[in-house]
Length: 79
Image (cartoon, rainbow, N blue to C red; front, top):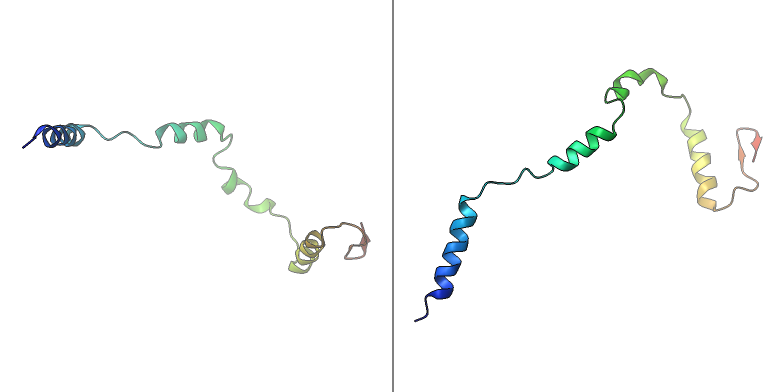
């Protein structure tokens, strides 16, 4: 019987079992952290959220879904 393939498979499993786990996601985390200018922006800007009604947003969405911005009336304004 040929034991070469079995021996090779056991060697590969042995080497894999002894290897260290790579730090997956470390590079992506570093890139993300470098791109964030102000990590506390969410907390600092809680009072800046603009006020609006659901009706206004709904009319905007309906106008967008029509596929044309002509003849859309939003709260008395013509676009």
